[in-house]
Image (tube, rainbow, N blue to C red; front, side):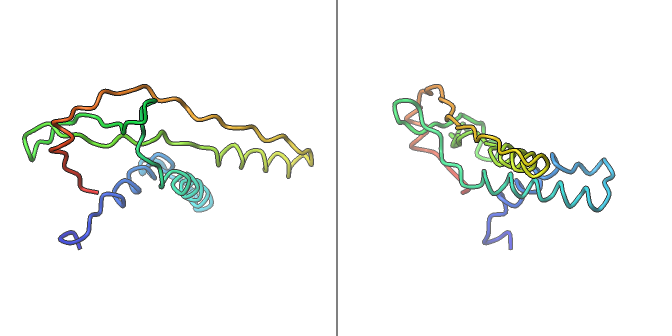
Length: 129
C-alpha cells in the first residue's frame, strides 16, 4: 500500500488522537469511547483547513530543512485549528442539564501576521500531499 498511497494523513490522525487518549494512561471502556468521540469531533472540524494567507492575500509557507533532499524547502502553513464544536457541545449540555437557553457566542477569525515569501524556494517546492 505504501508504494502507491501516501499514509501521512492517517499517521497524523493517530498522532493527534494520542492527545485525547495517551497510551501510557489506563482508561475504562466508556472513558475511551468518550475520548475517541471527542477526537472525531475535533478531527472533523479541522480536517478541511485551508492554507493560511497573509493580510495581503499571499499564501503562507515556512522554511524547513529536508534531510533526504539535503536542501531547504517550503512547507504550507495552514489555518489555525479551532475547537468551536466544544463550545457548542458545552452550551447544549448546559441547556439540557438546566433547561435554560444560553446565547450563542459569535466567533471572530484570528488575524495572521504577514510572512515574506521566498521566491526561489517556492519554485523548487516539493510536497508529498
